[in-house]
Length: 358
Image (tube, rainbow, N blue to C red; front, side, top):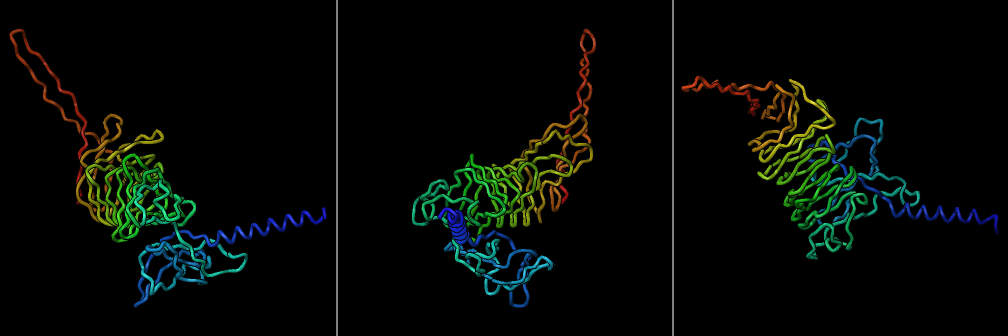
């Protein structure tokens, strides 16, 4: 019996591993298929080569992943893979399956999978409250391809997403970052028509926002220096700030906006890692299709003597340029008294002025 014991243990471990694998399959990763193209009456989508060949789309009502395609070619040797989505809509959150040979070695096309979603039948509205969620459990971005909001809730705890976890807000749903809370988005936030995402705290990261974004708090691109993308319009309220870090002439924060930008609020700039700008440096801190408005205030770092910050509001971007500081000389004043003349020499003042180049 002793000689068979190791074999028995090995069999039990193998069975447990296979069972665990079956429970974990499939694993989906959120993606944004680009570009979406129209061919006649059929909608097609191009997928980067090397992806696995199972794709699903999120049903924003039930939180289920609906199968779109199965067993399509996705070889790494091909320049791209194109497949037809019709009659599926071209908007929404898409997922690719990142596991293969699920179900104990048997390749399957699709296993229904639901993502965590809010419970519309309760009055709970804080993210950190288990009662807010279907299943009475606070979800983790690391454990699901997406988290779906179907009602208005407060993101009352600091949250962080990776490249595999999306926050999706359905029509009628809303997510609010309250004052004092921080959302680090390194994946994506997608807002369906009729949904809302509001920021009164801090939104940062290197991810993307799919929809139009109204900012009343701090927008801080990157984790340190980096870029954040908004695939929609950006509206800054008077209480908002854009927080930019500059580490070098080639590494600094950028806010990329696919649509229009309405500017307001405060621009905060910080120099990191001991970096000191030089005359002639240019930093493109924001890009957009069109823009209106200006920052109502700025907090800019001190520069070496003789240098000044100049803000350029251009047609498609905002740049910070390091320029010569203009010197305004105050005329010398003489006061003649009975005892002689008193001289008061004015000091030079360094000023950098914003420039609009529409």
